[in-house]
Length: 166
Image 1 (cartoon, rainbow, N blue to C red):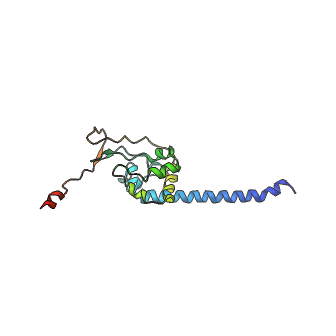
Image 2: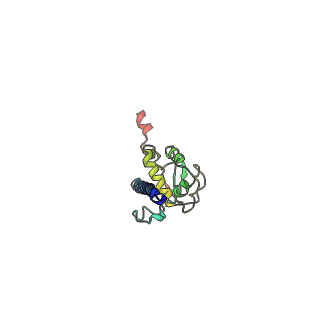
Image 3: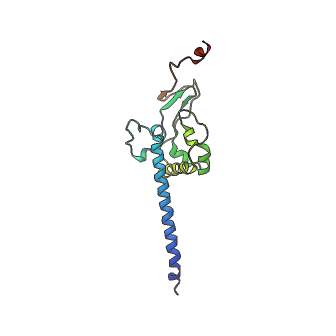
């Protein structure tokens, strides 16, 4: 029997397996895209996303933002996730996104996600490829801020301490 005919069944099985893996990768990517949209990642990490009511091309997604969030913690900036994931492994991503982060990042939502969901997000973002520039470095409370920022300082809070002593 000719070698080509003997190898055919193995090649066919290898092809089918590769198509299944590709389909799984596409499903993971689609799930990651869904979680990014539903989780509101673009609201902060994509400049102009909220103002455009979410109608921005995917090529512009998750490139970080130079508009900061200022509060008692100082001024923090939404990181460029597309650059971040290029320099970190899946294992590093899982460990990092479950750790406390500067406000207003809702890290506790990520902490409570499954590994599968977090990896789907990671793989989706990584699949977008690197783009944009790094976000500005966070500024300590009272430090000079040379960018636009949103003030997250609570105002006119009830004076709980005074109410408790009465």
